[in-house]
Length: 161
Image 1: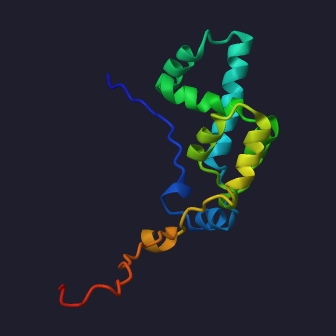
Image 2: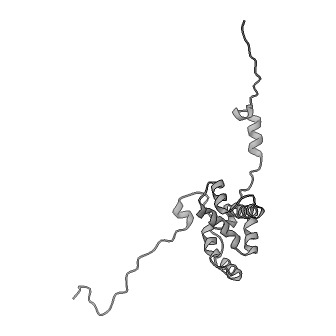
Image 3: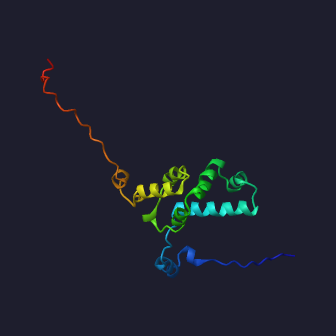
């Protein structure tokens, strides 16, 4: 007696070279990337809500669940210490032109008075944009330092005497 077994297998041909499917996906508009700081701000809001509802006991438990250190979770949660209008601005950033560096915001959080935070965020100026392509030093705009010689003193002669 022979046992035979029949299985049905479905193959997705689009993945392996179906030209029509590739052309459809190529013409689909790319979704704009959500800035990192926006995602971190949203996480901070979500995590605080989880703690408030009692889903997690404390930040240490959140850190364990998220596989991050407690220090990193504290950095993320400190974004909640920003003024509400700054938090809202972070949540609704658009694209790379509005990229705000997290390190700048960490310095801002150290000021607990919200009007001071607002003044400082205005003083920072336009946010830093990441380079799209090209040499790193040229795109980032590193300034080179020029060494200047001190002005020659008239009381000294060139021969050192």
